Amino acid sequence: MISRDTLFLIRAPFEDVALEGAWYCHDCAAMEGALLANPHWARAIDVRRLPFPRPRNEIIALIGEMNQGMPVLVLANANKAPAEARRAEGRAFLTDTRAIGRYLAAACGGAGPHP
Image (cartoon, rainbow, N blue to C red):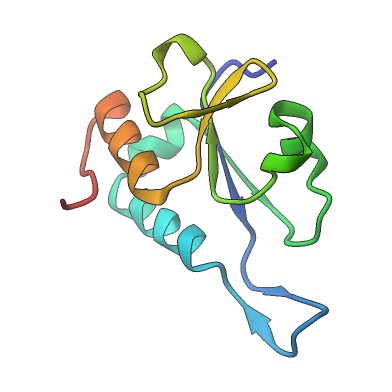
């Protein structure tokens, strides 16, 4: 059970054993930028930065093995989910960075993604 909306991001930088070098997730970096533009979001929700390798058990426990990609915003109240939210394990969640930004701007105030 989660009591607040929870945003999961890949902790950067990370290594991918299949590729040489250090990396960051483009979509997670976009969300990190949105959090910098809206620091009050991080006080209103839980932000969890997880390592890159799978399995990502903390996410799996909430929305299932098929939905462990990041970024993902798991909503505390599925009844308040926007129409574009996906659903699994009785929870609503958003995976699109623009949808996450729109939701957080509406729910918490601040700047959302430019159309």
